Length: 201
Image (cartoon, rainbow, N blue to C red; front, top):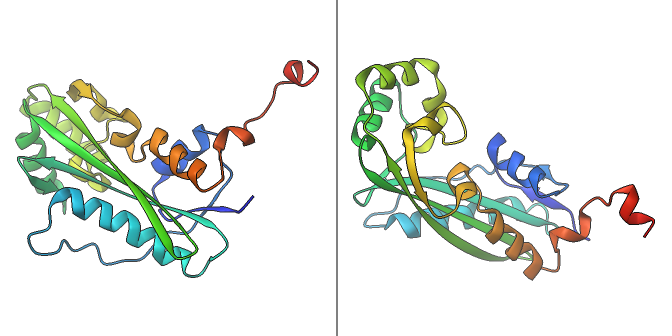
């Protein structure tokens, strides 16, 4: 089977791939992430996921390369990673008591071709107090997160409802990732460990 490469430095995405039993290497992609003029959030995240995967695949033509991108979208506007505490505070205030979308695209590049899948999840925040926003910003957790929060971390207490894929909100939609790999002839379940008991049956 071909080797798998994750074209991302995100430890969260690596943890999710480990969760489904994949053996892979990490080679972060270096691409321009500036949105194009009049580009929709959906097109933006899917384009970036493909560009990341293809950029790394150029130097690894015999490998399966996974790229991914996540954006938090409120009222059609992308909320990226905060530039500092003030912007994190402002984003969290805007998200307080609202429903936003988390759009995550996963792309698989191999032999110069790229296939991708886009997942949109609705996330509802309860009302946040000024004190907890301040405490969360002071924790440092929002600083490298799209939308200034991490659902798998301290920020998980802000979410009162989620409609869609939890793993996509964390950074990688597992069902869609497995489907792309299976379509490329790499069903992830074939690499799952077998317990000693099942091996003797």
